[in-house]
Length: 442
Image 1 (cartoon, rainbow, N blue to C red):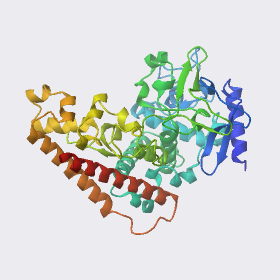
Image 2 (cartoon, rainbow, N blue to C red):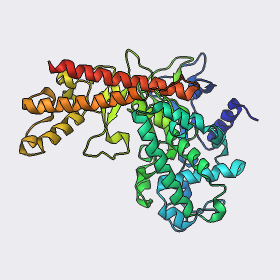
Image 3 (cartoon, rainbow, N blue to C red):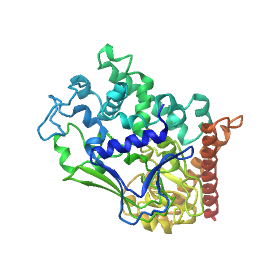
Image 4 (cartoon, one colour):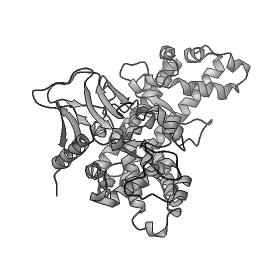
C-alpha cells in the first residue's frame, strides 16, 4: 500500500501533467495533527502575491462533469462539444430531476467505484476513504459520539442534515436502474457528501463567468472539488486571493502575506463560526487572546424552520466590538452597531432589530426608527425592556439546555473530546452574554 507521501507525490505529478503547479518553495506536509497541509520548505520563504498552487479547471470535479458533453444538455467544456471519452452518463431522467449538488456527489461515487480507471484516481486516493468517515464530520459520527453534542446548535443541525441526506438519497436512487443500487449505496453517498462538504468551493468564486449561460441551473446550485488546491487548511486570519485566468482556464490560490521556512501556508474558508467549522470540516478553532470563534446561533420566529445556520443570528463569546470577534464583526449589519448599549454588546444587531420589529408590530413607528437608534437604546423604555427580557429568556433556556444535557461520562475518543470542548465554549458564550445583558440593565 502506498504511503501518504507517495499518494501526494502522485497527485502533484497528475496536476503538473495537466499544466498545474505547486510553488517550488511549498511542500505537501503530512502528520497526525494536520493530516495534509501546505508548508514552506526549509531554507525557503513565500512572499506577498506569490501563487501557492495553480490548477487547470479540467482537473476539477463537480456536477459539470456529470453533464459535460451529454447530448441532452447544452454544456460542454470542450470547444468542439466532444462527448466524454468513456461515453458513459447517468440516465437523463436522473440528471434532470436530481438537484445538481446531489448529482455531483453521485458523480464522485461513480469515479470512486471506477477505482484506478478513473481519471481522477490520483486525487481520490488522497481523500479520506469511506471506511474512515466516522472520524471526520459530526453528522457521520457514531450515535454515542453525537450524544455528546445534545443541547447545542450542532446537535439540532445534525438531525436536520441526517434527515436531508436520507431524503436526497432516497429520491435520487429511485431514478437510477436497479443495477446501480448495490454499488451506489447509502454509506457511499454519505462519504461523497462528507468530501464535498469539507473540501469543495463555490463555483462563482472559481468558474469563469462565461460558463453560466450554458448551465441548466444556477452556478452556485452545486459545488466544485479542486484537487491539490483543497489541501490548504483554514485560518480566518490568512490573507489570500482566489483567481481564475479565463484564457488559460486555470484557478490559482495566491498568498497576500509572507511565510517563513517551516510555517504552514493557509487558505481562508471565510467568516465561519465554530459550529459551522465543526459541522462542515470537523474541527473548531481554540479560543485565543487575539481571536475567538465561539458563537451560539439563534433562530427567530420570522424563520423558525431555517435549516441553514447562515440564516440565523449569532451571540458572541466576547463583545462584537472586541478586536478578537472577527466573525461577529463581519456579520453586523452596520459598523455603528459596535457603539451599542452594553447589554447588546454580545448580540448580532440583526437579532435586536428582528426583536424590535416583532415587539412593535412592524408599523410606521418601526419603519421610522433606525438600526442605530435601536442599538443605542433610543427607543421607548417598555420596548427596550421587552427586548432585554426576551433575550434573557431565550439565552437562559439555551444555557439550561446545554447544562441539562452534560455527558454522563468522560470522553473516550477524539470525537467525544471535540464535542466536550465545543459545548464548553457554548456554555461560556451564553454565560457571558447573559452577564452583559444583566449588567447592562442597570
